[in-house]
Length: 276
Image: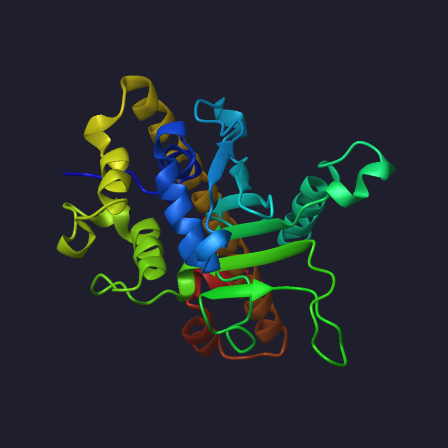
């Protein structure tokens, strides 16, 4: 039994952004935000989740979600597998745009509802020295008393790279969802602790065997796009390291350093050093 990897944007949207799997997204959001009582989500509307996108827009991994409780909160749910330039600024931009686009004229300011941006990343965003926990919440606070008066936008981040509870299935519901997102692509069966709803349905949705031919083709192409991107990054790093080695070797040669010592330090062969 094989499952698609929820960290791939197409797979994430298929599992969490389908009309027939709303309870999966609701369970995830309620466990993340600790919603109880009248704060629990009563209704959820999913915008265009790009379930069948053109390959060139697969990188657009944002789910347009409108959740309704007594507050009428809006959510942005996003899965990112690699870091991009000005990443945090883009997150703030998208959340601000969602907040502003709720109304069309200034007279409607009272109609503005809270926007919660949920971002899941397969990389570390914050330095572990500053934020060591894998789930963090970022809100505006008053400097002197710590009060929360400007609560229009709230940011939640789940850093999968900091989640180390992968040796066994955790007991906490939120941790189970994080485990599912990080590990489903490597599992060959549904763990005993997750043989319950809505996890059963999430695994059913993630089964490769349950995908249509068209979905399988999109998923394969999405996986290849991620692999190509990673390969390009690795190649750039390797080329950068190679360039740095050449610079170091040339500096050592200018200083008259023994070429055998240069070979030991840089890893170049004697012939390569003589060529330099």
